[in-house]
Image (cartoon, rainbow over all chains, first blue to last red; front, side):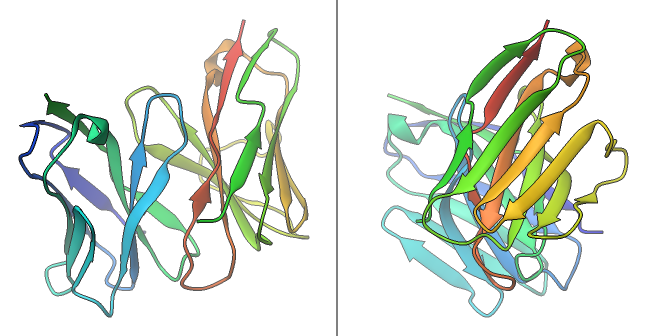
Length: 111
Length: 116
């Protein structure tokens, strides 16, 4: 089955700096890669996603890149703000039928 | 995005009793719903996948007689933890997808189950 690895497990950045979280996957059939933000005691919220026919996608301060050959994808958050502090999960899916999650990154933005 | 509502958000029950958790898709029909369990500071562990009108598919190591899943309609799936024990205490999260291929999964807000 699919194996998703995520790094780093914790990340601290100064407010205004950028944050990058990286994930790798093992199954070349995976074609959908969402990123979720989870705040304490809440369910994950989809923040951005990318499909395998696209190399990069951007939504305001958030961007995701995908390298299908290397089987890795990354989340980039620019101009970080304290409210970006949360746990972020990457996931890989084959046609949305089943989602495999990374181990999570706890992001802390220091004011 | 689409809304998935999970109820209750918190529940405390006595050991040996059963607890039902509901997951509803409010503004779309969910062909598939997923149930996850999350331990503190850990990732989401898929427990089972349910498709409307058919039996759920359980992940290896998940007891289907203990975690009963019913997906009776396109907007509702329920997870019943039967004969709960303290080790079943956890954060349970459902998610739902609107379609069968190339679609996003939307998550409920989670249920914190504490068995005393």
